[in-house]
Image (cartoon, rainbow, N blue to C red; front, side, top):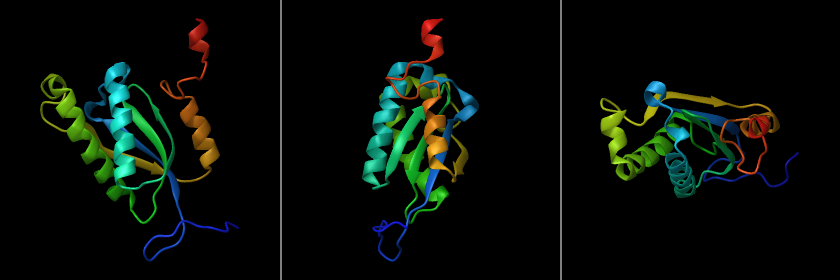
Length: 143
C-alpha cells in the first residue's frame, strides 16, 4: 500500500502509462541527432509546463516513448497537450521540415498509443530503443 499517493484537486492516486507518439507519415526524423535532441528538450519543457510526472523517455527513428503519470488527464488530453506544445516549437526551429516532409499536415501522427501495466517492463523496453539511454552500450557499438 502506498502511504503518500499523488493528490490532485478532487482526486487521489496515480496511473502510470507508456505513451507513444509517432511522426506523421513515419518519417525517420529522429535519426538526425539535432532534431532528436531538440525534441527531447521541448518534450521535457512541455512535461514540466503541464506538471506531468515522467520517469523515462526514449526515441526510435520515427517515434518517441514516454513513461508518465496521467494524473487527472485522459490519454487524449495528454496527447493533445504534448503534441501541440512540441510540434509548434519543432516547426519553428526546423522550418524546412514543414516544406520538406510534412507539407500537408502536422509533425505528429494523429495516432497515439498509451499502455498501462508493469512499468518496470516498459522501463526495460525503453532501454532497448534505438536512442534509449545515452550511456547504454549496445551490441551494434561493437559491430
